[in-house]
Amino acid sequence: MKYKTFSNGVAIPVVGFGTWQVSPQEAYESVRSALDVGYRHIDTAAAYENEAEVGQAITDSGIKREELFVTTKLGNKIRGYKETLQAAKESMEKLQVEYLDLYLIHWPNPAAHRHWWKEANAESWKAMEELYRKGVIKTIGISNFEERHIEALLASAQVIPHTNQIRLFAGEQQRALVAYCRNKGMVTEAYSPLGVGGILSNEVILRIAGETNRTSAQVALRYNLQKGHVVLPKSVHRRRMAENLDLFDFELSQEQMVCLDALPNTISATRNPDEVPF
Ligand SMILES: NC(=O)c1ccc[n+]([C@@H]2O[C@H](COP(=O)([O-])OP(=O)(O)OC[C@H]3O[C@@H](n4cnc5c(N)ncnc54)[C@H](OP(=O)(O)O)[C@@H]3O)[C@@H](O)[C@H]2O)c1
Image (cartoon, rainbow, N blue to C red):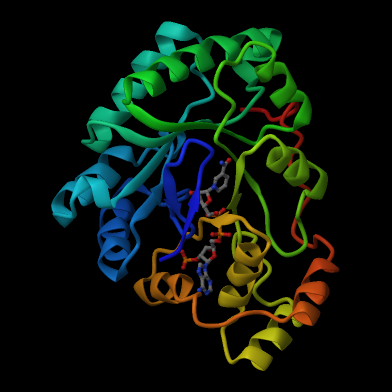
């Protein structure tokens, strides 16, 4: 495994295991398999409603806590100082962990808090900063935040978010936002790095897979790694989990990267966080 280092020196494995749309029934077996094939970084969220099963799988794996990197996210219904302290506590209880490696605000402008989203995020961030200072959360970050949401947060933040987890795949690179985040010293995490599976039959990706004797999933993930992102592929199939982790003994050429850079987004436009209905 390779690692990236956050601005505070904490290291994150560059490949994490995604658990969105993994039902509670599937989550236990999937996370057990993922840990078994070598993942040490798990990405979940209160909204995925599988934290308890993810936690049970972590506990039953017997892997030492310090060898794991566990991320979860503050749900959209929850905002406010006390409410966020409580939500973090509940997530940790479900995950059966004494600390989180990374806690994220999942979306910047949830429907339930749209009338006061700036203050709401500031209040929640204050709680996250407190848990960070106490060492209960090792790094704190945001997800789906665009520049205007980050600027609003920074107006009162004492800790600059360590990361922004955003939608990044070949065809969707959010270049201006990535440059802005890097300029602020944030690591960029790529969610849906396979375009939720939708880019794997892309002709250019398939051609490069042929040239490199790799699968299209490996090419798509390697592309995001070479762009400097952490990647979070999800699969409920053990063979694919292993394939998605096997990314470190090949490299895409400059020419192949240029071809992938030129891909249009054929999946769907990235949502405007100010208009999400959740
Ligand atoms: N912060 C956010 O708002 C946010 C939003 C979306 C996602 N995320 C995070 O990012 C993670 C990944 O994103 P995602 O779940 O949207 O999608 P993804 O990882 O881009 O793609 C997952 C899809 O690709 C398939 N797949 C995986 N590996 C494959 C392979 N080697 N060959 C062929 N098909 C393969 C999976 O099917 P099978 O499972 O059937 O193998 C699934 O249908 C999430 O699970 C979540 O942790 C975060």
